[in-house]
Image 1 (cartoon, rainbow, N blue to C red):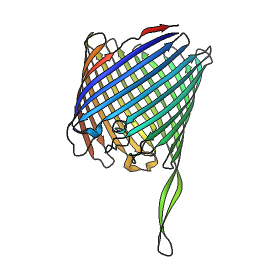
Image 2 (image 1 turned 90 degrees about the vertical axis):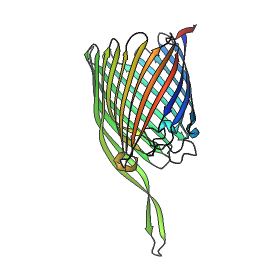
Image 3 (image 1 turned 120 degrees about the vertical axis):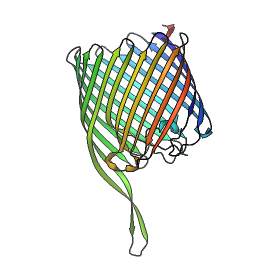
Image 4 (image 1 turned 180 degrees about the vertical axis):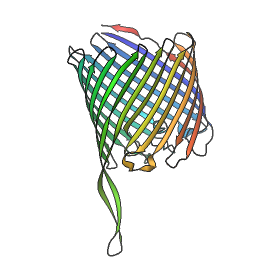
Length: 379
């Protein structure tokens, strides 16, 4: 067994003209951020393990309520067997809602904490070099602190079974059956079942495409408040349990083009996503990203993301929203372990009524990267 240690740190300063994405932009704010993480690896011929703690501390001038202390912990263990593979992933995050809700609830008036606990075991059985079966499960519990009454705590359980057939070196077929259960403290329960078939194909040595599609159906139970009037004239209030059904199509498309000096990738995803508004949302996500290395010292990167979110079965149309952002950065290597980066970021947030808010951010970062981890102990 070999053990590796890989530290990384980022020191960032930024200016943002509408950090809370208000319709009437508030004051320009200035941020100082320190992001420190460590990745500890354990590797053998049949085992790979990782422990990765991380801390991200942000301080703002101009709106001190945006200040946040965020902590993350990730771990996984991956064990290979003669005809199988077992992997268990786990993570914990304690993040600021001013960051976690940028694409979800759109509630930026307060800045509390969101705590998420995830455990995800998965097993793959290799029936032959061409055919394999897989089964996976996942449990996610999300809690918001008591000051954030606008957010809804929830639990999200997922399970799937899959079949993969490698037809050739370039072509692979997949089929996956999945089920999810979404439970909120607002007495909402959603069970969704889906089936997807997919194709992964290498069009050329440097071009890969992947496509999967299939139906999804949800059974949604929720509690609504009904107002009535008694014969005496008094107003009565009752909580009534109701249910609705919803259906749709899941789609996942990915295209990647690699070059000796860079990479371009584009994707489109349509899926149901758990949300802190107390329901699942039907989400369309378009993403494009590119990187390019000019030489050993200079490189650049760009990202575009478009996200359209709609209430499942239109139960809460007020939660419908659209967001997109674009960012571009250029980096300069200063030494083997240090880089400096200049980044511009633009974000637009469009609410259900069509009102839009924009934010622009310019930042400078100094990045320390331990690079390829070195062996710290061998046993």
